[in-house]
Length: 279
Length: 279
Image (cartoon, rainbow over all chains, first blue to last red; front, top):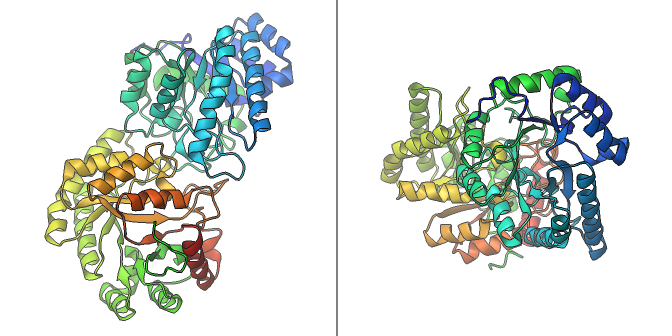
């Protein structure tokens, strides 16, 4: 396992972690100030700053980009909605290219409004992926499916286990892999086995860390800082690295009532300290 | 598939559904009044009423008992805690026998205080089950492991998929099966396959219904009434019956801010109406 005790090279900051008090420009400045070398920005933050300006700021600060967050959201109630999603994903690919991102993360979407057809939604995801795959390949932009925790199956992502995501990758083929976020998968009895499968097949495109708090107060916005919850982070990183992953560990914390309210400089310091001690 | 359009025989009321405004005696009266023929009571409600009195009231009202809720909670930080859990499970078996229950539901427990060792907790569950299995067999009391939604892995149950529960049953052998609650498993891509497996092996001891609300406001206490959420209830009952299940459909709704606040007579009416139309 890589020694992170003094590491700054393998930490990536998902910009959602400090999104409430800083815009993208401030985040980029903050990363430069704290010695963070890699980020994963969100599309809305990039749009607010402007795509070209974002790319220039990132470049000028010497940052690299692990991933752009996010494409996906494929299922829709009608053909027009599905086509709009495909078009939007193609724009996301263009933006990822413009930012020099190494991947585009996909949160695939849940049930269309008014639907209870989970299997149908999953088929719509496959169809949507097929519709953008060739374009992504032509742009050399890897697509990283992020399986989301089952509690998001209805409204955010109907791909809910690493096994399911990898089965989907097998059906899709080239250019498609997975982003493993401990928050979503830590509970999975098949986690080790599926991480190894992802590694063997060269599909492990990203690795995200945060923590699961007990109790969790909110389904979406109560993720914990690494070390504050119950996830055995070192064990899972051990598996990921055993599977051949040598990329960045991306810190992504949605925490409306706690970390998002703190001074972002303090948050970044804590991210670094925890990256070096508990991740 | 069984026709429930005028059915009262296959509805069981989990007493948690009206627990906030009625005690067990009132619930039993309410069931008699509404023509509900089967209940699944909780141990704390039985204890408040008294075990012998509860058994007599249930008998006198002509009710049957699908299951007693609940045993389990095996993992503990030390040997004393684990033994206390085993002792408590043996008492739960005795209570289930006294009530004439057809099974004892087990919510297996999560991580011990301060622990991040999920695999260890799962081993503790197996050990705990082994410690009570012989006693349960001697009492002819089937033990129904209820896999809980992955969002409860840390604090309530580290058995989080039907596959995992059935793998555990395979290791344990006789007298141990599963209770399938749609709330916990509806998202699972392997649900149909694992329901069939449970049926084939004679391990499908119980089936619980409610619904998944979008959005869900609380991790524990915001379950929906059948038909109000996004679960395809008829599809899943179809699978369960295809797998050979012909027992009761048990309504179990934890809903602190909605159903628990309503007039329990209205709640029971709604349960019956939904049982006959959307389950």
